[in-house]
Image (cartoon, rainbow, N blue to C red; front, side, top):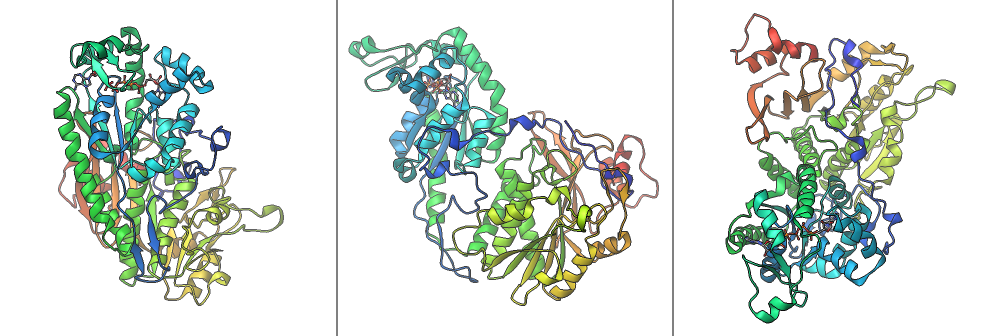
Amino acid sequence: MLATSSSSSSSTAISLHPLTNYNASATPSLNPSSLSFSSSYSYLSPLSFRLHSSKTHLRIAPKKGLRVSCSTNEPLKVMISGAPASGKGTQCELIVQKFGLVHISTGDLLRAEVSSGTEIGNKAKEFMNYGRLVPDEIVTAMVTVRLSRQDAKEKGWLLDGYPRSFAQAQSLEELNIRPDIYIVLDVPDEILIDRCVGRRLDPVTGKIYHLTNFPPESEEIKARLITRTDDTEEKVKSRLEIYKQNAAAISSTYSSITNKIDGNRPKEIIFKDIDSLLSQLLKDKTAKSVKPVLQTESRLGQASSNQEKWRGIPTRLNNIPHSREIRNYFYDDVLQATQRAVNDGRTRLKVEINIPELNPEMDVYRIGTLMELVRVIALSFADDGKRVKVCVQGSMGEGALAGMPLQLAGTRKILEFMDWGNYGAMGTFIKIGSIGAKEVYEEDDLFILVAPQNAVGNCIIDDLRAMTDAAGKRPVILINPRLKDLPGSSGIMQTMGRDKRLEYAASFESCYFFRLLYYAGTQYPIMGAIRMTYPYDYELYKRVDEPSGREKYVPLSTFKERPTIDEINDAFLGKPRNKDKKASGIWGFLSGVF
Ligand code: AP5
């Protein structure tokens, strides 16, 4: 269900709407505690907001300039995907031979369970026999346990046949398991059926043959070959259908690291492509791991390369929850802008980022995304040797009227429980407090205020102002402040402290701004976006669908100040700047948005 914006009655409010294909039930439901495997594996630890966990940075102390990356050569982590019989297993044999990765094939693991007659095997058998997917909790547990074994950690891994659904992909994301590359083998449907029906397996060597494409080398081998029970034409069709239903959702998780390869060529030629991709990746990893780097520079360097990858604005912002890649893009984007502004001596800064997950007016709002963003910024400044105070407003009002905005309920606790790394930053370089003058200590260097806003019957402005005054010349960064009028649950507009709030908000300089654009009163499709990162101009983008079905954001224009409705309309219409005439017709849509 989609949310509607209730703040649109304010003439200055921007009415942003969430996205259409959100499926709240798509949220993964992996519950490690329910798994029957040993929970001693680190991958099965509860979901945490870990920032550096996948890297082996060894940080001497959270002091300026003392960040040494001591990663040893990190092994390759590869995912291979494709329709049934697209050649995954065949290519995996070649990849393992050359790169020595640990091959983890969920199909093979499941078939082994079936042939050993284990409880898992018996459960899985009925699904496999019908060409259906085995339930997520069985497969996910198998994969995560296997991935956590020492050999996979040391030699690297090659995951084949997993994830096969959006929920499986999200399970890995939540466990912080992410490949370096996602290879998709692309083969036309008609070829796939023939490949399956002609496939034979050697139970002794595990080698994959095909009666005509790759016949066995001898009569002896031929005599012992077996056929998979799910390799009938009917079952292949069903498997193919299931693959197609899930493919797009999975690839959205890995869009920035996806490499599609034509799998309808001789296997050696296909492998040549894969070989050169993996060799290059290995080279890049080795180069990175030997270079001592400043932690902050490293994060910022990674940020630039993230942005390079997107070449503009991340696409698929309609897909909720956003992929880790998309979240990282925005965290990095905000971080860079904020760092530049603080380094330039700016002290009153405002970050306004309204991607769907950070728009509290939508039912796709995710507090975890806001917290992750705050953590990235705080840790980065702490890495720079600054003492950062992260503040959330406390409960306001008294007696029966005491309360806080729903959006912030529980935020402080979440911040306290979050994983702030193992390097002692929390409690020394990062502290958590409430908004108010009494939280400002002499040792604090910088303040991050998380989504300050008024609550019904109470106004946050006095605490904010007092805190800012006490901070003096030290930077204060407001993350997604909501200081405009807010409606109460009765629908009555909250106007308490309005002038003071607006004046206070205006005294902060925008160092980051991102907003999607829709037709007024609609929620779909996304028409474009506005982005500003300090010290650069406001960039206006138009979203365009390409014939291939992909989308992209095309830069339309830039503006020194935040563009007005008319300026945006004119840019969309391709009109020259500063036209007197007001925009009209269908492109008047933005008038309602701003
Ligand atoms: P799985 O074993 O993973 O089956 P699959 O994905 O359908 O893939 P295949 O093993 O059929 O094909 P492949 O791409 O490896 O092709 P291959 O190299 O063998 O899964 C089986 C079942 O387990 C699923 O249906 C499901 O029930 C369950 N399952 C697995 N993972 C799951 C998960 N994550 N969640 C839930 N359930 C899960 O090649 C095929 C044939 O083509 C061979 O004969 C080969 O010789 C030939 N060939 C290969 N390359 C070429 C080429 N370039 N040119 C000509 N012929 C070629």
